[in-house]
Image (cartoon, each protein chain N blue to C red):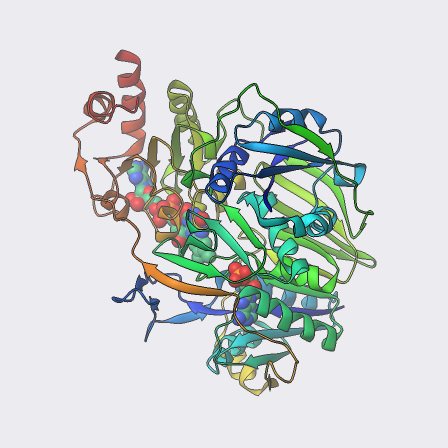
Length: 312
Length: 249
Ligand SMILES: Cc1cc2nc3c(=O)[nH]c(=O)nc-3n(C[C@H](O)[C@H](O)[C@H](O)COP(=O)(O)OP(=O)(O)OC[C@H]3O[C@@H](n4cnc5c(N)ncnc54)[C@H](O)[C@@H]3O)c2cc1C
Ligand SMILES: Nc1ncnc2c1ncn2[C@@H]1O[C@H](COP(=O)(O)O)[C@@H](O)[C@H]1O
């Protein structure tokens, strides 16, 4: 029996979270198969075949898989699930949309956003916005899992390629139709993969003021994130949101600017290696988790920070 | 168009819960309970469709202990027409909830089922997608915009890179994200009116659904706690610390 990893990818390239998912899978066994579902995604399959630890790549290529809609992909995974003990996907929006549908088709539980593996049937995951770590044992014949990428290292990509085997597509379900996608275009690193993340909150005051953070981000090679309040206020797009119900990040350095530090925000960043907080309220809860804090007006501190980075 | 909206009773989002001292579970005795915030957004979306004349009836459904009636009364006060409680003291996991919801959606011949994207207690983010699988219908998870017309729905979804828009036939399942709407404040007269609206009680047995949990909680523990660090005087000192002490830049 093998373990199946479902690749997270845009038809052109693998998303980095796939590599972290492979590391999680490698703790469960050695026969690791990776499924690439999409349209015209042979290049992705070739890239996937070079991930260390992968013994076989399965490629399902069909027009109705182009957008990887759960309604189309879930029946395919359910069909091949029987050969596997575990099905794993990264806990991005694609995996979160897909894996519960797969689990229900198989009549098994789904285990969301695991952060550790205790044994082949026991998994740790955060609940209540990360205030409790729960260890769950599953009695189901197939374990359907999403993996929190920040909790596992990325698997290496080498030169040795595993075989790529084509898989027959399932019939088109046709329940849902893709219309369009508006993606945030950015030259900066992707939020969940960045080594440095600078996030702004309500204290930024406006979308224009985020340019102060962007300038700093460009100096530091950082990604820009935000609190829910900043997203709700329309300062930045929704996919900037860090937190319990947004993205989870764990960079080397996280800088929270004008963010109070609500439980829901901390759930998405408290595993960062070093946390810096800039806030004018010295009582703000964010200081309770910050390694370094500056109490002050961000509109004064940010330009000084930019200057200090230039000088040294 | 008939709408079902699923509402879960959860620990209020302002409360920071802790594991029990013996790690056997989560300590939620006598804490404030509220409607899951994402479900308030779902109720608001349903009620707006009713008010726009696009929905004929809005039925709020909750599964769990008898006190879920309070949650259902809140949904009725927001504008749902009637409520259903599937009452049980058993622990309900997402697959079981999805099976109960399927049974009710079929019984009610619902055209649209609205759920929250995530319950803020278990943080599972599964039930809606599971329900759609069981009903064999389309799903639009993480909705930030919802438009209904004669032959279906157009939904914008919050995805990792931005926003995706999809078209669904009915029946369909939609799960709500934070930007779909801002739930209304309930006014006192509506709370009074809600007390008179019908609330039916059912059991999982009547619906013929096996709700036994598939996962067993072995241990609930405290996450590693971070120590508060130091305050630095200014940006120059911060940069020096990040460079020489933390070595992250
Ligand atoms: C269901 C649900 C899910 C949620 N999910 C998330 C989530 O995923 N992520 C998330 O972030 N939140 C989430 N929230 C919201 C969360 O509860 C908080 O409301 C939110 O994080 C607050 O954002 P904030 O810190 O930017 O705003 P505020 O709490 O208003 O804090 C603003 C801070 O800026 C400081 N400030 C103001 N002006 C200045 C200045 N000039 N200089 C320096 N400092 C200044 C203030 O002192 C204050 O501390 C969720 C809430 C709910 C109910
Ligand atoms: N016990 C329940 N009663 C009613 N609705 C529920 C229940 N559990 C989950 N739901 C619905 O499913 C959504 C997602 O929950 P979950 O999959 O547990 O994160 C919630 O926002 C609710 O709309």
